[in-house]
Image 1: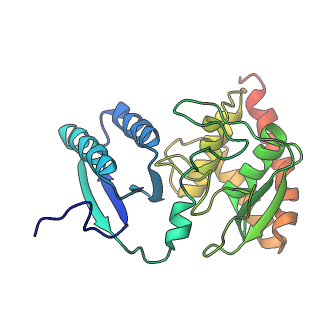
Image 2 (image 1 turned 90 degrees about the vertical axis):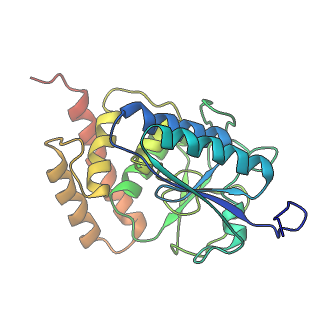
Length: 254
């Protein structure tokens, strides 16, 4: 019997894709298109939308574009996702009215009311340390931070999550959370993009950007994580590291 919208149980559509290294613009194009569709990043290059005919057609068009550029794309339909609840997946999508304090729509610059509670995983390391520094310095000077288990946490009203799954702000493709925050909040102050490249390479454990400062910052972050057992203490000790790194990148290079 043919499947129909009326006979299907509520569930999820998955788009799983792999992009070729070239052309460079394809990765940007696909990320932008997924954001326009409202798709949420589930893991790496796996994106999810609620299962309906419009979403299925949208994923079909995008999958066709990816394949035409030499990439691979698979669309799947599921009623069950292991390791994450339906409520957690649903929380990854904005409500019809949008999340209070966050700008909606493709290309919009996010804004938040000061004094929000920002939630992230326990055991903070480089991306969460740097992101917390960025949030408090440029996004929300009165930010309060909350540290929770990596799985099973349900956000309370008004909370904003970062560098966890699900989250309002987390990795997008090749971008670490720090870089996603720069993009979403339109932060273009000199030096921040360079910090993002250092943080990204440490977090991804590769040398995509190859900045000479990366190894030294990695060692400093590792020493902070080993010396301080509490997440609040780690963030406090890491803040001067990123202050100094910003001053370094702002200074005229000789």
